[in-house]
Amino acid sequence: MQRIFLILISVLLSTHQIFAISRSDIGFQGALPDGSILQSNGVTIIALLTLAQSILLKLVLPIVIVWASLYIAYELFTAEGDESRMKKAWKSIGYTAIALIAIALSYWVVSIVSRFSI
Image 1 (cartoon, rainbow, N blue to C red):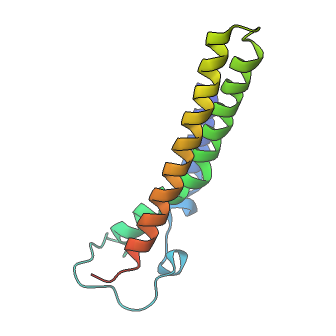
Image 2: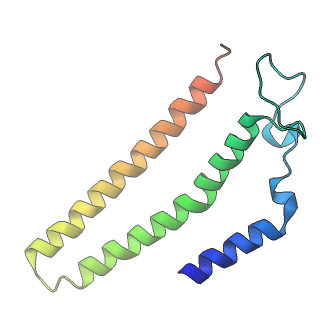
């Protein structure tokens, strides 16, 4: 697992274009709003947060979902009729569903709030 992580990090760091964000990448047109924090190359903090959100939603979340699904399936298949172990696996399914709903709702709330101009 550690090797896979190190390979992924080395691939991300070896391609310097993955961190080059332009205004068009985040759908931003026009002048920057007052109070925006600019980096030396013109990238705003919002653009960096958008990149982090994209990485979390498109890379980390699917990996976590697959890992949780495999763990739950392993627990169910190895329970061998033991009621307490099966109950634990079914609780894990419920908690996973609640977590996915919470992630979807939080993404929805943030996307709606970010559309308001304050």
